[in-house]
Amino acid sequence: MDASSAFQDTLPLSSDALLAQLDDWGLTYQLHTHIPLRTVEDAKGVEDQFMVPGENALRLKNLYLRDKKKRNYLVTLEQSREIDLKALGAALGIGSLSFGSADRMFQNLGIRPGAVSPLAMINGVQNDVRFIMDAAAQQADVIYMHPLVNDRTVAMPQEDLMTFFDKIGCAFDWLP
Image 1: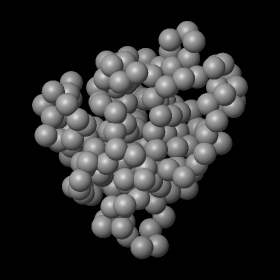
Image 2: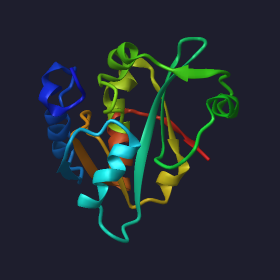
Image 3: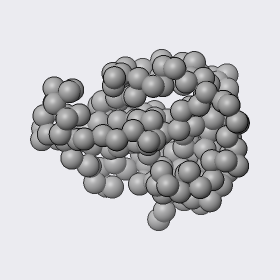
């Protein structure tokens, strides 16, 4: 199975159910559909189709990581930001980090590789996933991310994303 909406009914929470929840909470977003995007490079190839020129937007890359104590982390970064996992672990005071497996990611975030997103914290908070977000998000007006599948992207005002985190009880750390 891939990470597209064709298989969303196999997720613990479908993309459609997430979008309905966002609507119920009165959160604003624009939904865009496109070919499945598996990498940042794939995303760069289609973002011109829906990005607004001059918009103060943040496009993301997301890393599902684990430490030696088997704790889980979702790290969300500006898509072009370079990251050194050793330095990141040291900066967060958690030691060595490595990528988590697809099976663990599905178990803890309810998503498949290619659809990693801050919105997956709707599942992650229940599984003690620690969320860390690039401080660049504080300056963005709009944040682009997948709604649990990789053939859809939502453009959400930053304030609404912060409200989403409040609604799901997701505390997080800012990464300078």
